[in-house]
Length: 393
Image 1 (cartoon, rainbow, N blue to C red):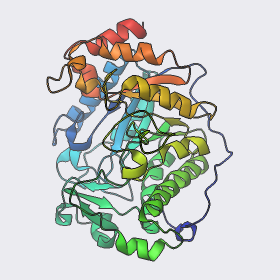
Image 2: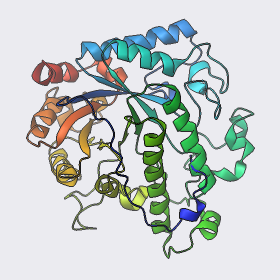
Image 3: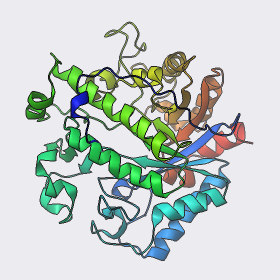
């Protein structure tokens, strides 16, 4: 996902003035994430027939309609592999159980067509840098780009990741994602919270050589890493506009940018880490520069949770997007509803409904996205049904 970007390593970044077409005027985002990595939501297991996979996908789309949602955020590039016939990367392992094996149909093409048939938007969800949820390159398909270019990958935290500090990596992953944007009428491109990896105690992300080669002008490793992530976001924003004007670009980051104790402009939270310092993702900057059309922070905590209060974070994000033109959607942790391992607030089926009531007091909040599709369908405590009854009638 990057290419001839090496010369930009220390270049000042500026926003683009080209406008995208937004959602229909006044339309509230009512979305759900449909995850394919590790078969979290879909397909229910590896190795189903093409007809079985397609039938399960349509059930999820029908569930979105039944729950009165209007958007499905479909994970189409889970681990540097693809849910469409990509010339850049192999077929996804989650389909057949064998990375690179043709499943006999086109999941992304079908999802776009069938979502639009139902009046749903289809947002294509990509993970830029995750290669595998293990550290053995030999388990990747023989033609996988990471096997052909072993210098691109870093093993960290039990995973294989592309190195964000290499310009050729940034260009490649952009090219791989943009192939889907060219070929399908997706309504938006969506990224989640994985840029540099979440920190793992006692482990070092091995990018010292890349820093030595490409970090000129940056006295601190952390500043260079943030710059690399900025480049990825800004370049992708510009290239989406070139490839298919009107397709929106959004990011769903971890919900805390920085804690107030570390930065007076941060939120009044005490989270264990934040995107700026630990994931090297300056999410607030992307909003201010206009590089993204919407931001959907994952506010996966209950109202009143001491380290990261949902109410405080909605306030902070509303203030952050105010006057920028970037729309704010709130990522909601439906998966926590009724989970006995979660705080007591999540045992109350009304907790999520209270989130929407609170967020409605901020005009900057333009909707919500629920994680994830499996829970939208099963709804073990009735929390989603309560949201629909209270807010989506």
